[in-house]
Amino acid sequence: MMVLSIALREFRNMLNSLLSWIVLSGLSLIIFLILVALVKAYLENPASSLESPGVTSTIVATIFYFSAYLFILIAPMLTMRSFSTEFKNGTSQLLFSAPVSMTEIVLGKCLGLYLFTLLIGILPVLITLSLVFGTDLDNGLYLSSLLGFILVTFTFMTIGVFASALTDHIGIAALGGLGIILVLFWLVELVASLVKVEFLANALQYLSISGHAAPFYNGQVNSNDVVFFILTITTFIVLTIRRLDSYRLQH
Amino acid sequence: MTGETLIQVEHLYRDYGNLHALQDINLTLNRGEVLGFLGPNGAGKSTTMQIISGNLAPTSGHVSINGHDLIDQPLQAKAALGYLPEQPPLYKELTVYEYLAYCAQLNRIPRHKAVAAIDRACQRCGLVDVRKRLIGNLSKGYQQRVGIAQAIIHTPDIVILDEPTVGLDPIQIIEIRALIRELGTDHSVILSTHILPEVQSTCDRVVIINQGQIALEDSLAGLDARLHQGGYQVALANPPGTSDLETFTGISKAEPIDDTRFMLQCEDDFNPAAFTETAVQRGWQLTELVPLNRSLEQVFIDITCNDSPQAGTAA
Image (cartoon, rainbow over all chains, first blue to last red; front, side):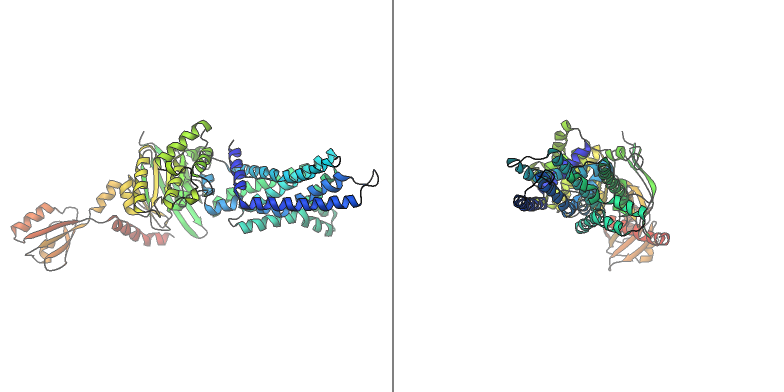
């Protein structure tokens, strides 16, 4: 109940913000351009045999893949204000002196941002569904790509919320979020390829977001990958709660 | 039920690195009481209030609100509390009504009672005419009122107001003070300020804090008594020497201001009626006898200055 109130407030906050709409319009333009490019490429070189990849895999999965990875930049921008501005404007004091637990505050904030992420997610869904007028889509692959998109974007958004709880400066919050996302998305994989110790390389490899996201766009939903994303999201939610608890100790 | 203790603060310490912002603060607040919390800038007023409201963790010490420990049972404790920080915690992009509706939800007011609660808070704080306007477009005084409305929307037992009249014009100050006085009838209020007349016009009891320590705790009546320990200014057309005046019971020192007027510093046993009689008998030709009240400012300065060496050694 309380979580929902905070979530709706955060969601409405996003709708009131100019930045959200700029992001939405920019994203729709980019996705549309990608679609045009992919469709053109596919028409010039269509699937020749049953084994070659079809429309769903070459166009739909790619669009979800790109959209999710655009969130490396979008998520920090959308989440940078979630706690930073509350600290800066002193409105965090409204939350902290109300009979609301830190867990409820963080879950509410995240839920509100997830709702907004789903709203953004309607864009790639609508754009890819437009292909239905010309061809048949692979429902299984479509849904697994969509699930991959949702899990990856939710993870990025949660990381952004955590970064925002670290500072009252939105610029630092955005950069911090971007930094953590890049490290988990890409850098761990790079380091893993350099590490010679097999155990360590495997451990680092396991932490890579891109490694766990890839199977979804091939139509595979592995419980291993789903659990990885749920664990990562939970970890950053818990870290954010801990961070808010300690915020009262130091400032 | 007056006399019931609502806030109990025991041995509160708070350090910022090497700076001891609070040292051994003990406070109680009883039901139906308006407690004035006075101190110069940087004395630790806001720090204390932030700790009581749960926004800041103390380094050590103990706060219990309505019998609930603030650390062990934070939700129950905070439910009894309304807090207006120094800077009102307002979402400027919301209308007054939207904002108060959100505050009502945060304070767990059931949905069917929320509208009535918002209406009541708007009425008490004089916000009825501006409830559809964006908070960011309101004047400072109205924003302050929205801040107070937020603190009282769930009719908490305790209302904590941190410098509620800062930056307001004189008429708004009078209105806010009247509102605080009114709140004092059915809530307990802690009011922090460095404006002394505010305390005189609104509070029942006063705590003066200086350099992180409590320098004085007294009822307003007790504080008033301190104010009268001033002296008298007399004008005598045919004055005796100052030494003659100083022989009179209760006069510790007489200082001439000009040829006919004197400043008398008096002890408690000075009797102005007896002095008048003596002046008549001896033919001093008394023309003026004006009691000099020490202003609250002087009391305040005395207390905060006298204590500073002691506090300095402690810090």
